[in-house]
Length: 333
Image 1 (cartoon, one colour):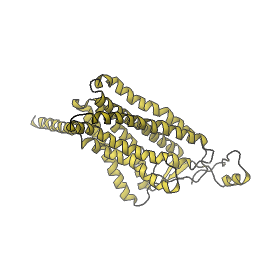
Image 2: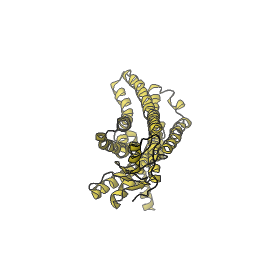
Image 3: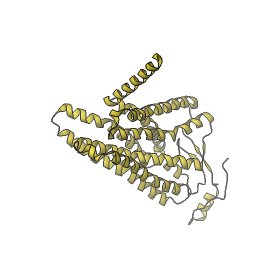
């Protein structure tokens, strides 16, 4: 049972509203409703998915780090994206699997705040990282002669650092605003992780400041990067259409198709979840959409970036061949 405290009563309330809030008690934990049917089957499915995400994205990090042919700006950003995806998934899936096995769906307020912070922090960083990848493709296609001079090692490292640096203070402020609110019950979160819309529904206070903060964050971390990505691809599309060779157009577009696929999936699901009205009918659908950008996209990320990328597949082959030769050398000695 949650610990009870003196109920919080918002200011400027009439007697009927005061009596309404007095029926509730402040809680110190939430219940994540998540997915409760077929827990064993779901645990096996999520465990296999989590291990596949770690293996697939981990291989991309290793290959793009070790292979000299892939030490280019494009693969530098891909390596950071894959590392980010592993961290992003690790914020939600392990807790979800523990809940399925133990049957205990509770999460303390500090744990909920920590989970929400890392989801927002990593998600906001990914938004800007995808924008940086679009800008990288714009330079490579539209300004090929100046590409390496502009996208130097210092510049691309700076872009990744800025992506993290922008997200950190904003998310700390967001978490501070949310968890300074009183939660007077009920304490059931209709989600598989602590997400802003569902948690704010449980607060018993004026949410104006929080709504302004959420709106501002949506503009900064969703709309602004998306506009930058669209602007980059408008210039890329113009450059591709001006190419005289059909083969050249197809080859150039193939270098962007993987990134475009991830952008459409990530921003499409994210915009629907955070920009659409949170009606009762939309809640179940938003839970599925959240599963899409927190689990499915990190799972598909290695496939999207390797199946149509000859350079990455060739690097995998070289890495395997090198491993076999080392084993053969060890065995012969």
